[in-house]
Amino acid sequence: MILTIAHKEFRSLFAMPSTWLLLGALQFVLAWFFFARLDAFLQVQTQLAQLANAPGATQSVAAPLVSTVALILMMLVPVFTMRLIAEERRNQTLVMLMASPVCSWQIVLGKFLGLLLFLLLIIASCMLMLLVLALGTPLDLGLLFSNALGLLLLAAAYTALGLYFSALTTQPIVAAVSTLAMLFGLWLADMGAADSDMLLRAITPTSHFQSFNEGLLRSTDIIYFALFISIFLLLATRRLHNNRIYG
Image (tube, rainbow, N blue to C red):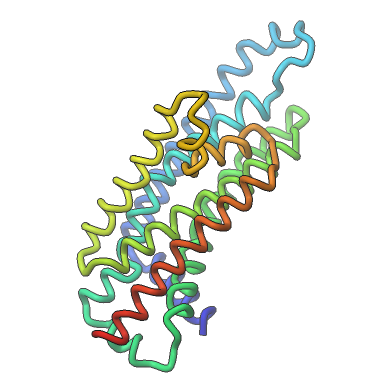
């Protein structure tokens, strides 16, 4: 049943014209930024060749592009998560889904996986764009893998948070604005935190993603994302469960 719900959500995304417009605009922005970073790298490549341990194309082009994708996901994910539950509740289709012999956690997990699969396509297209660099220069595949994993975990965290806010309201716009405000607040907290303020940095997803962006695979970052995702999926499940019991 989880896979059925996930498949339905995945197909419904591509049934909307707005999805194709967003994907087209996203690919244009990523391609423009990719070529801009590549052009800047080629202009200083001669000077870099004279340095010991000079940064390669992966560090100079790939890592900054992935950072840009992470920032775009912060603004893009709320647009997709807002409709997952809030729109179904507004259209009265959630009542039929709740009346079926499907557990609340199956509904939440199915919708979560459906959107995450869609976001995985965006991440994969970004990685394929970066792999083109291998035609002209050696790539640090370890750094690429670390960035891809970081993007996937970050997208999953944003999706779980957006799914929870979507479960709180009947208005998709309210869910989108609430999710964006929360994500933007966490991002500002990370940007404004002092180097000594480790507690504030410890609760922000972007600070943990930064480790992946630098090529560091740390168990603490993976555990953080696992807890972040689990907590908000459990909260969304609890919200749906309460709706089923109390109406």
